[in-house]
Length: 250
Image (cartoon, rainbow, N blue to C red; front, side):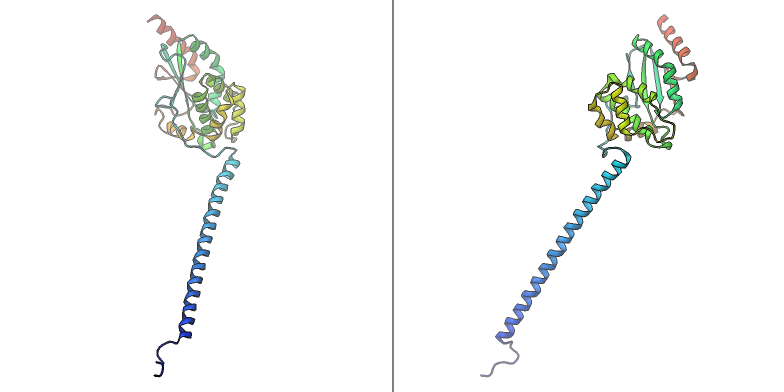
């Protein structure tokens, strides 16, 4: 019987099988190359992202940011209380570490405040805010650093507060770097363990929030309240002395 011309020969079938096998092998190789290329691209993107974070941190003079936090030692409105909370007279100070008027107020009244606070006559609540943020990020960074000290080395807070004003940069000049702030902290007796909190900017977001949500009476810095009444800062010592005198006779 003659072979059916429509039926492939054995040689044809073998050639066809080899062609299909070659096609499948080439398909697998293309898929492997695409997968490898995808992995390389993903790795490159990841490295690029990490490099970008590091570059930003280096340029700003800061470590890569850590998760932001809410400081438990501060009041809900963003104040840190120093002295006896049950003292007969309450003093509240809203301040910006870049504000030259705040520095003047601190220099003129620091000794007076210390004497009355140590004597148990007044409590002093500090509200570090960034009302001058339009001039740069120094107000936020310095305020965050103050919060770090209050949280981790509260006994050095007042000394650090005074030292920040003693080393206050020119308004709008960019401010101290985080490394310079840590140097100021160390000179004020703050232990080195606090440095990482300062350089990370841990509380800058929190400072932004309490600044935005501040007492509506705070339109500028320094704003000072004595027994919840906003006063003229030029009359600070007279007002506080009168309040302390009134409290002692009541």
